[in-house]
Image (tube, rainbow, N blue to C red):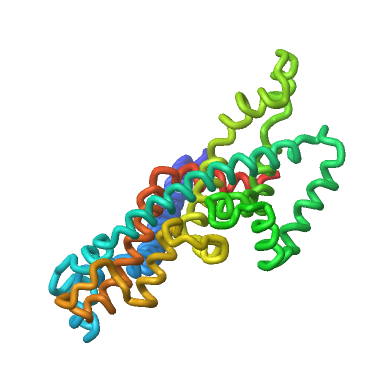
Length: 309
């Protein structure tokens, strides 16, 4: 006679063992998640605190900043530093110049990079390997500052917007990322378009570009940040102060201490302490405001364009 109780007991023991294992696994997963979230919060604090500190110092009293009393919250709240910065008309003009250089330069960069990357991504291009090699050589070897200036000067582009936006028209590394993204678009899409009578230009404009919005948004962000922060080409190629970007004006403010209306009644301590932090906040604020709107494209385009293929 078979003892059925032992079978039921075995099943009950196995079930309890599985439940205990699941509880241990759940507890381990919960602990792991807590550690990950703690590390992420710590990293967020490390990255964001410098920006937060600069914003707090820029609206605090200069003497409290010098004594090291300002840590987390502003002391002696005032907007004197921002008033001094914005009281100079050259700041408004230079902001307009920077917006112009950034918008025009970014458009040229993205258009030139895409037009270069797309042909190199097509296997039917004759001599594709040679062209790619020649382009990569320009990333490794550069003519130097003096030859570059002589070329720009010979083309009569000095002291104009074209000296800022034309020489850096293509970044080779960004072009390689975009080419890799284009290579991941299935060939069947191109072939079906060609069967319907489309040419290469129409396929590029009507099919490839709409499918490549992630990498295009990524390249737009990369190029826009570079143009916004760039000041060295303006120092070399621009001679008229009315053409200076905001970075040149801000740099002269920090070095020379000349700010707007030099009112002797204004506190010199505020000029020397609050102003440099206010300058940084005013300069980086536009890029910080734009980034959240293209973050999802930025992450997707950077990962797919650089890792796949």
